[in-house]
Structures are given as C-alpha cells and as structure tokens.
Image (cartoon, rainbow, N blue to C red; front, side):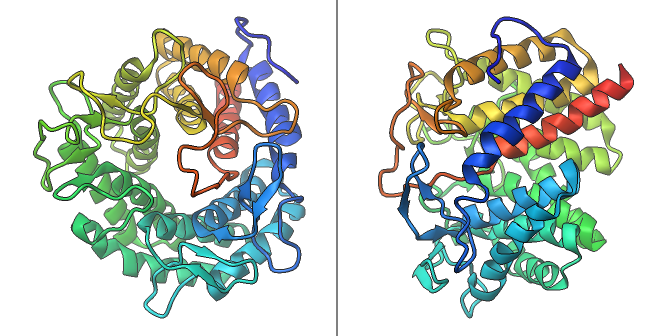
Length: 399
C-alpha cells in the first residue's frame, strides 16, 4: 500500500499503514529468503533488488537481524516462525562470533570461520543487543550469559576512547565520540533490565549523563559528535560536526532510560534537542535530512555529509511519534508528517521491497558511499516501524 502524500491520516489509519508496510513490504524482502539455511545467519551483502553479492556475514548485521526477529516475536505477533529463523543466528554468534580474547569478529565466512578480525566496538554493541532480545524471547541462558560476558569485556573500554575501534569510521585522534556512548547506553539499559542487574542499569544511566553533560552544549542546545575527553568543545571542523540522525536516535534512547528511572524532568530537554537537530539537518532546497552538518557553517568531518540516508529518517519518524505522545504539541505532529511525506515518496523500493538505503542530496537512489562495504541490513527501518506501531497503540488508547 503506497501512501497518499500531503494527507494526514488519523493515528489508527497510520498504525494500519505502518503495520502493512512492515509486514507486506519490508519483512518479506529479508525473511526467510536471505536467511542462510545451511550455516545459519543472514546474507547481508545484498543489493537493493535482493541480489546477494557475497556470503560474508558482517556481525553487526547478524546481531541486528537477531534483534529484529526476536522483537517481532516479543512485541508484534508472537509467531514462532520468527524464533525459528532467529535460533541459527543466535547459534552463529554464540558459537563462532568471538575470538579467544572475547572480541567480536568484524565478519565471518559463510561457514562461520573468521573472515575479518575484530575492528569495531559497534559489533560488540549490536551482538549484545540481539542476544539480549533473543534471551528475552526464549529464555535462552547461553545467549544471556554471553551478552553479560560481553558487557564485562566492553564496558571499561568506554572510559578511554583511544582504546575504541569504530571501523569503518575511526574516532579522530584526541577526541571522545558520541556514537559509542549512545549505543551502549541503550544496549546496557536493555541488558540491565532483562538480567535484573542494577549495576548495568546504572552504567547505562552514567553513559546517558555523559552525553548530556559533555556532548550537549547547554547554551545552543546543539550536540557535538566529537568533544575533547571530559567534554570540552573544540573549534575545529571535527569539533563542530553534528550528526542530526545520531542526535535524534540518541535522544529517544535517553528518553527510555530516564523514563525508566523516573527522571521525567529530563524529558523536555531531550524533546527540544530532537527539534533543534531536525531544524539543523533539514535540507531547505531539496528536502530530507542531511547526514551531517557543521555548527559553525564550515565543512563537517563526516562521510557523505549531504547524502540522504535511510536511517536518520526512520529514527526521526519514531522519535517524533514519541515526542507527540509526551507533549501532544503541534510541532511534533507537523515534523512527523514532514519527515513521513519525504520518506515515503523517496526511500521505498516499491519494485523489490524494503527501502533504498542511500540517496544523493537531490533524493535519487545511489550506490553506498563505501564501495568496499556492500552491507544492507534489516534494522533501522523495521525497528522504527515496530516502535512506531507500539506508540500508536498507546495513542489510540489515550485518544
């Protein structure tokens, strides 16, 4: 079902549309046809038309796929088929995912043997994330045990970003990065709740506080992707770079954390930060959200800054529904439909399914910025749709 642009649906109508988009357009592109039935795991080196380019399995996408399948079971329909597809991904990660030092491989060959050595802490985060959601769905103790082991192994590294590898986009020398803090705040929060570990929940809260106290400028309301360790803002192009999509995603992560801990007084700041960065990121000429912007009017130090990438838009759709659910304010509704109309007229691949992941500034599909990393994965879009459906269910209950 294609949307009619410029017409605002009622919340129940929007819920129906997003559910159909998830179940009829997005999920069939991936599941089960891209599951490897022989070795387990997901073929995630794939073109927008579904052609498999390589059977090399990048582990951040395996963790993400495991999360999506488990979340579908937990929050959408409790259909056992999702767990049947998730089980071999969990086995691939738990049996083959780490080296003897406890670091997660960057990728595996089709049969589970190592392909690329560990080189990104984001892989650790998404494997913990997927295993946690799978353990929640199934009670699988091995998945939870390995997620807890990975927490113990990974958490100390976040204290010194010189120790963190974040390939394919390394942290600039001398800087602290917002990206690992936001991911692990969310991942540790979910793990802490499932494991009933107060220390892990507090660790997530510490990371959330570090984002607000060190990366967010209280005067401008702008969030710097890179700061000097400790929070000092830097006037270089690196220090003045902002990633609007990261900020929007980060703020809904933090909303979950602060709401859980009863710190509701923090939520207005998070919502206003979302609004500020949508205004910063919106392309007035061509529409859509640019990937990166410079807070001082210079050139941001980020890959493909003027590109229109799928994930900032999916994160914004979800975050704006969350903001509206909190405030019922017109700005959140207006911004939601602005992002919705752009997204659904530009990103969906109506012929093959799923969305185009990469558009140029004018909104035309293009090849990935990193030609050496032909990864497409089933994560930001289905996650945003799942969360949006749940938020719309709540709006329907309170209407």
